[in-house]
Figure 1: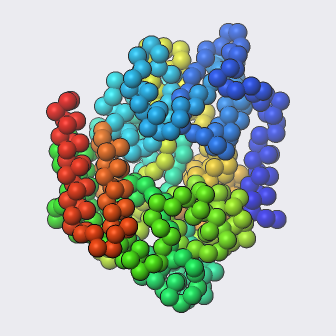
Figure 2 (figure 1 turned 30 degrees about the horizontal axis):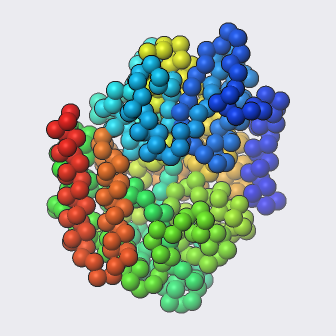
Figure 3 (figure 1 turned 90 degrees about the horizontal axis):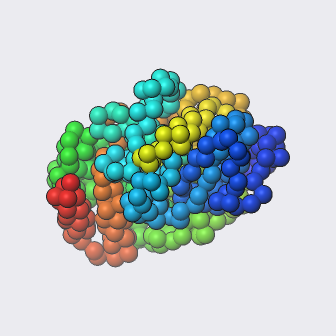
Length: 451
């Protein structure tokens, strides 16, 4: 049986019993049954992921009669964050979605109520949740701000047939971005692949690579030991790691070994990988199911955990990524209680496993990974997901992206630094690093002055 068919079969087995409860009108128009508390969820999930969530909401609403969750799409992540900041407390939703790298921003905001407030009263035992996720969704003092929904995982997708033809084992070869350059060159020069590598164009990967390297992005213990005051991109070991990283990007594109940086991932990169034109693709694990639906169902797909920056990389674990659920500070205790109940329900093993299989994300808990649902998915669809599950457990206290309230500004500066060196083989790497450092320092200074 084709792997994509297995995914659809697993999904159908879970969803079909609740199909009768499916919403027949847009969620914003759903009528709240009498006697229930409405729970409004603002989210940026779209496309097939939104459809999956709507099905899960239907299931939750059908299984209990106290709360009624209503999903409201708010556009992209930046649109959602802007609306949260501009909305008066009384008009805020009961819960909202947010990227894990924005946890520091949410913790410092006036619109997010710590999840820890509810956990302390309820004594919720969420010990099955992977430790690196628990840490990433906490504030600087260890209090939970939110809870993971989409457990993303950064790494390098590999066409295993191409690697076998080249006589290479990607799990041994790809420890740093310099290794990615070296292997991409081999693949193209030997005529094994039309393209050596492509990249998901997002600033997150800069801080992820630095975390794997074992160096901090900002001072104050990467923001976890106090208020960060400056970027470390131009300092010591972090500077050396940044140089090695950007040097790899520049050599890849100067040599013509990669699909142009900034190429649309869903529309162009994923289809090229699925068709066997591309040897490697640095992205997140949720691209896996998209590869299958793009025609890559018969590919032997490997995924190597996120590489570091240089030959000195520790390569011990990968920092948390993905999107979580947070409770809004809206002065509606009943709605907040419903949001908390729904978050706990989503974390139940079967729900978490279903979401992981449907979306391609990793499970958020070891209990979800142990379910027959996810085990079947790994056995018949993506056996090498086990490497990713194992890598999650190898992280430590320094395998983290920075804890900052200005994550957006950092991501923009990171992305611009890559674009400059990737698109211009003569662009000074030192200059790109100084520009990113200056931009981040300015954002930190302005934030600290205002707060």
